[in-house]
Image 1: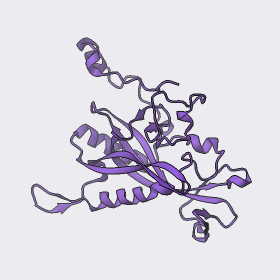
Image 2 (image 1 turned 60 degrees about the vertical axis):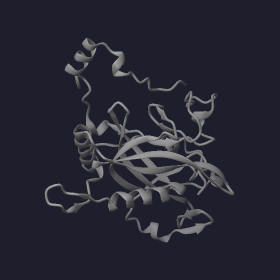
Image 3 (image 1 turned 180 degrees about the vertical axis):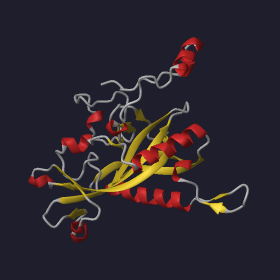
Length: 265
């Protein structure tokens, strides 16, 4: 499959066409927000089907440690990365059948379920009382900001070895301070007023090598349009009006907990 997203540069369009496009902006593009599903952005690992020409998920041109959109197939170079505006974060607790018992995704466990307090460790795995495996997933709802100023919503979920990156990212967001220009007070900006660049790096242990995230602060949002869209996106999520798309890796569910294509725990 070729890259699913063909980016059309505004500069390639005539002035007349651009005028018509902006004059009719939004026409026919309004849908029931409850039906809108936000795609995931994930790292391509060495065994990802998107890198196998024989698989229908194949993304032409993509390489290991690049990042990709699970719905559109758009991908970003892992070294160059992508810029995001974080809008909302939630933590999910996911249950999987162990691989030696057939594997498969069983569902999400509510955060207040007492069973989460009765897990045990078996090596690098967290085991529920009835023997299934528990995976913690930090899900960051973001706007991905394109180089031309456009933006698109996405969920960046961090599991297993990526959780340490998520913890650092949340800490950096919470510790940010800016000086109020009128009062001089130091304040923490809204999460959706900040921008961050996500790149990837290789990590390894005795189980193998895999790609992981790196997160760097890119400063405050400079576009009011992006700021207002990010604020509205956060409010829609908190109101339950939008949700993440169905996870293709959970749907496949052939593996147990390593649903990020063999990321070691």
